[in-house]
Length: 348
Image (cartoon, rainbow, N blue to C red; front, side, top):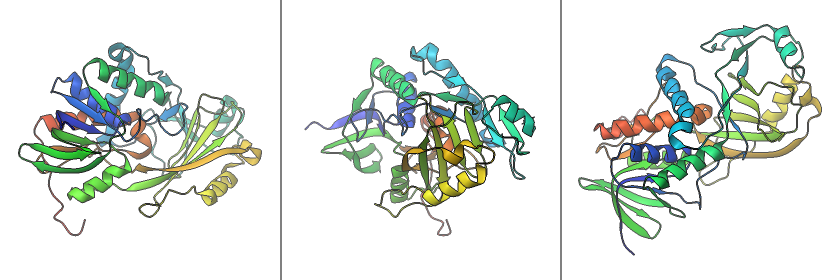
């Protein structure tokens, strides 16, 4: 079988991998091959709409601004509408809550007047008007359509099994095929972390578990509610159902499937059922668990010592908003000749 030769190999056809491949092609930097273990671009775990929320902090501000610019401009240059809908989000206030940039504070009666399914329990909330939802299937389809239109190649059912960085490129094996790429972008979620550790790349990321619960709730709720301290999010999926996400640092042993945190789910519903009475009797229609890459306090794309192997980074529950900007930043850094280093500090 003929060897694969390309200027850039992108591993993983999730949202970040698609955005990396698209940006490389828009920059005209040479041939791009996108590979994935699945048959088609990954469409996300829900099949419905997903929320786009922004992390706090000065370090993230320019990335957030650029990500929103990219989302809002995609209709023009991708020629397919990703169905972005700005709807706002409600963030319950706690002593350690960080206010959104707009700093819109709603008193308890204001929230219950706006959304009849919320009870006035004295809880105050921030309102973030810039929060939005998007259809991840539409986004993935739009990016894949553009990648193919401008000359990118997608190879399904191909998993990266080995790679070695050398002076003439990265020698790799994907399934039964070998090849050489000028650079490789690793965009395979938590599996990327195993590659980083195997390569000895210094990093502070870790895997986390996301428990997802599908509920049938009243539509008189805010489109998105985000509990910052709890790292929990309730949102309307656009198909008549709501989804509750709960993020935990606890992960399964390597090789084991992530487990749904039923105890935390029951406790959460008990704590918040006075504010959201629908939690009392709502039926849980489905539950599943998955892993994601953690968030950090600042953007941190990673690159190998030779400058040819790149991990664009992630940001936990905020990655759905930030992935196009993180992809762009990592590509531009690699093209500019940035290099990283090997893990040498035993205290890390």
